[in-house]
Each structure stands twice: as structure tokens, then as C-alpha cells.
Image (cartoon, rainbow, N blue to C red; front, side, top):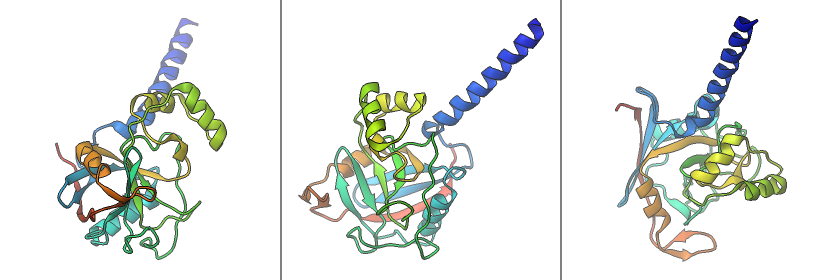
Length: 226
């Protein structure tokens, strides 16, 4: 009986560790050889991101293929809102253009363990399943207590697991965007650059239009190495 109980406890522990590990993967350092990208922003420096290929395969393939083809080179972060996010990837530079590598919109890819925390790389869209080329990076470090998150759950008809509640309380982010925008990557280096870009002068604060163009010089895709 004791042996059966011990096996049961060990099995439960393993599953708990697996669940915890999956929930924490967003903030882990990339593994050796993992595909990552450097977003080089003219005059500011670089933001480095890793990807979630398993959970958001189409969004990752779309972004990486566009990056390797030079699609994003010379485009701008056309919409910048401090304490919120920076958005780019539109050839028109207005938020009205862009297309996926397939030439048409592709579907959303949501995962309960990937959230729009600070530093999340997300697909921009104009509604459900309208993903093209535009993306944004969450810059907000605003944190949320459990009571506030409970109100957001009711308002937006979403549900946060215990790890998400903990992370929104420590890391910050934009919880009201959960399951509205595909999270397909995460910043692992360059938060100072992210904050610097988010703090640029605007000529239109309501629409987040910067006074001077913030240009994506290039996006380099490479294999991570310590």
C-alpha cells in the first residue's frame, strides 16, 4: 500500500512539474541552437526575441520567413504607445497594410500558457483570424492584483490560470488582450531598447504616431548560442 501511495505521489509530482515548466517557458532563456531573432532598430539598438514554434507554428513561420526575405527591413514602428506596446510590420506605415507569406489572412493560435506579458511578441490584427504581417511587442510593466484580474476575466470572457495570475502580478503586461492576439514570441534581451522606443515623442498621442520615423533597420534570424 505504501509503495502504491509513493508511486501515486511521484506521478502527481511529475505532472505538476511538467505543467509548471510549460507555464514558465515564456520567460526562460533560449536553448542552445534554438531559432531566435534580432530586431535592429535604427538609432536605438536591438531587441532580441525567441519563438514558440509548437504553440503558434503559423505565426512563427510567417514572421521568420518575412524576416529572412527582408520584408520588414526599412519598415517602421508606426504605432507607439508608452506603457502599452510598439507596433510595426506594415509596408504602408499606417496600420492599414501588409500581408502574410501565404498572401491571405491566417487564423489565430492561442495557448493557455502564453500570455501578453511585458515583452510578448504578438500578432496585430483587425479582428479574429485576420493575421497578416503586422506585429507588436508589449511594453507595459503595469502589474495587476487578483481582484483586478478577476474583473478582467468577467469583462473579456477569459480565464487566467494560477501561473498567469502570478506573472501578471510580477511581470506586468496587457491581460485584456489575452486570447485576442496570438502570442508567438518573447523578448529575452533588449528591454532597455523596448522602453526607449516606447518613450519617443509623438505627434498624435491618441493614435501613437511618432514625431520621427522609428525604422526597423533589419531583422536577423539566427541560432541562439550562449
